[in-house]
Image (tube, rainbow, N blue to C red):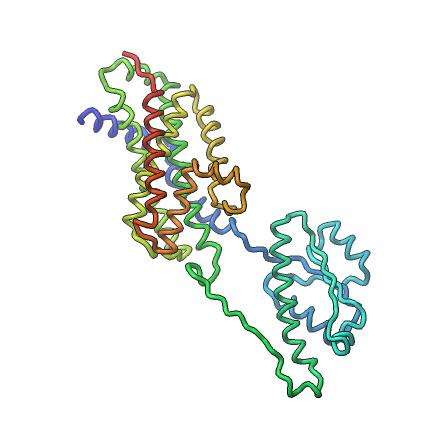
Length: 373
């Protein structure tokens, strides 16, 4: 026990002596949480909007005003022809073009219907899909109002049948994307910092030649590994604490569940990350190699974790692979506990899988570590 405590004390001293490591541990995660949480958004705003008004009526102008009043669209210009509108979209000056046909108001009054032409720049398919939803909602709202305004006097006694759908948003009533993204980005930071630091730490011992000196001492392999990884376990828990404080103070993210439950799960999850870092360090000779290999796996884990894209939208084979992704479970647990107030029974499946993952990864890491006396 004294040996382990000595190694832990030595590791903490070494960490705080390394001036290059301190910013990575304490400064960059805080800046990344603030910056990424504001930048990683699913919302599409400032959509460059142009229109072709071939009707020039009060009805067509009222429709354009609907788009102008929206916070998502920037109504830029009125194009005299479809050719000029297409040219502007080709140059990237316009994202959406609305074409209002001639006799638009007359057709609504006489025929009770009319058609609109909408052209959307779909290079970014995800953004184009969101823009299409915005446009459809505005047109449906306008259509609902115009039917009442254009009703004939003979139809005054006939009350139009209108069905109103009142949505109820659970867990994120304001539809604030930061409420959804901040817990996931916090998972990302805890994972990356603990993985990179634990992976590079032992490799650094190889580079400076102190690992060989430790190997010829009577220190047991288990004592050495615990002493080397425990400081980074503490750092990971500290990052979680700071991240939760910033999430509450800066982004006002709700924390409906138990903080103790989050810390219990995180303590097990960090063991998984440390095991992966140790396993990588056993097969690398330089810090650069450890960094590149760790980054290779982190990118795959992040993109297939459901942090930025729903797992349900992935192909079936990709969904099967995500079952072996520890970040997926951590993202799910953080969002469930923080936003839904889930309890121990709710996260028990993820907890069991993470515990098994921790045992397997640390077992492989200890087995692959070679200590010669």
